[in-house]
Image (cartoon, rainbow, N blue to C red):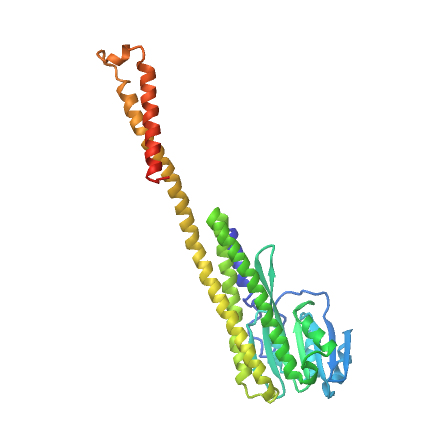
Length: 363
């Protein structure tokens, strides 16, 4: 029952909760859990010579950034405030169908182009080491000419490295446009998958060692749980590969030609992640066979010990059976040394058989 609950939890992470039927396209309804008390807006406005950060602000303070010649990264933590998101969309001319996808936190990764913007939905993953499970959070990115709009379910992400590069003016990020910032954000998400895979690989190695030394039904249950996590991870990364391919081969004017070389590298990373997941899935399936082999080996060892013990006691039982017969004419029954002689014969048989088994390397 516990295993079923764990697998059901993993699959529910990727399944969209039901919403009302019959609503017109573009109806804004939040589908998912409310993970913050109130949405928090912040932005980073930068160019090669400028860097400005503003946190916990009102939407009105973000509006001048739309017409700014600098690159602006506007972030919103918390998606449950539908009215705020609707006002956000109207202020930045975002398509209602795209906003509908942003509010659906169970939406698979996708890339979609519009007239003056592009939408990228991806999944940011976290690995809970205590429960050995993967948690997912949806990240939605809008790319316009000079703006990148990101929508997250809660504060905390994998973009601290990007923020630090912007602050320190390190690398080429401050010299390029909004399209390069989008690439950097998606690349950070994909790079975070490698850290999760490293932890999963360590856990698989640990399970393998434990299955060899001490196989148990509890370990088998953990193996099945790990297989469920890898299935969920594959469901997340497979659309990511298609998404990056669409970014690479898209015809949107929002992406400069010079960004394509970085998108190709990002596509290679998604392929590496997917290949690693497939390898781990095969290894996890092999752990079930390893469990069965270990249990069979343990059973064989027990049967070997029992067989040796039974083999030793067969001649002893034969001797005891003979002298346990109630015939009168048995000379040894009245012999003074008959009892110790029988004990000596039985000990000699037992020791002799142990020596023979040891010589044959049967144990």
